[in-house]
Image (cartoon, rainbow, N blue to C red; front, side):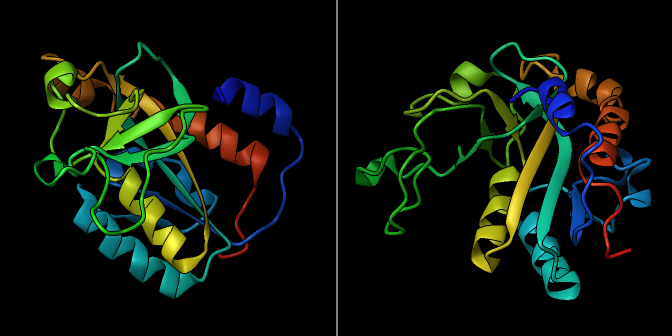
Length: 202
């Protein structure tokens, strides 16, 4: 779902609930602490798991919302809500498991019915090469989303992720990310204000 549509659907329907916002970096969170407690995890899946696990224990939220930047694979622009999460650097094809599947965990790749976020601990600068062998089309890439979703599943807490396209996951990705890292925060803050209002955890 595009965020423009989400804004239209939820306009003037803000509800009060216990939610927290999680970002990887403080630079991605300007304006957001007026709405809810904001947790900065640091970069990567391990940091994301540790910090969000601790935050859920502390705040006991009904909903966790992740905002952050992502590299666009399928020529996306702007802010987007994520529908599916795949761990793209889980690669055990040498033991006949599909890429993106953790062995012996009863996982399957999702059926693509919306935007698919691929999460891995490597910054993507050549999507065709670095995502080779995945059995599902990836629309965006980041370094935390899959892990955050897994932590919320473990705690049975609702999870939503919104990603602002910062680069095209190509050879220019590093410079593009540095220039765009804060650009989507204002749009995300507008969405949160209209959709949820202020968290009761403040």
